[in-house]
Amino acid sequence: MASRPTLLDFPCDYPFKVIGVATEGFAQEVLDIVTRHIGPAVEADMRASRQGHYLSVSFTIQANSIEQIDALYGELTARPDVRFVL
Image 1 (spheres, rainbow, N blue to C red):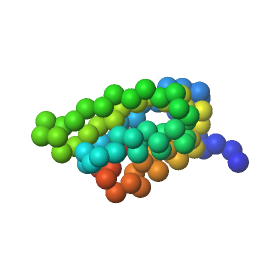
Image 2 (cartoon, rainbow, N blue to C red):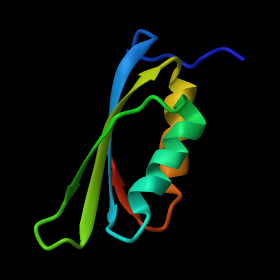
Image 3 (tube, helix red, strand yellow):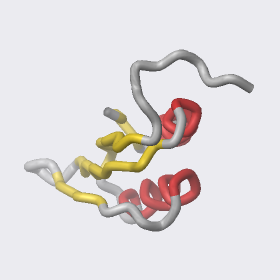
Image 4 (cartoon, rainbow, N blue to C red):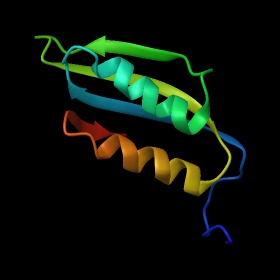
């Protein structure tokens, strides 16, 4: 299957920021999803919102294809506690 056209040159670094409800285990669940798609070597920066209701998990992956980015984005956005994926 041929890749669809993209402006990215692969492989490339591709940043993600996942913002969701700050439930117990949220960050670990996000990292588990990333590990399934990328592997275990992802460093993440985590920050809580001012009132502690939300948590952002930021990381950069080494993307090999647009399909890989789409698959990761799709699984992250399917989670009910995720509000945004940037």
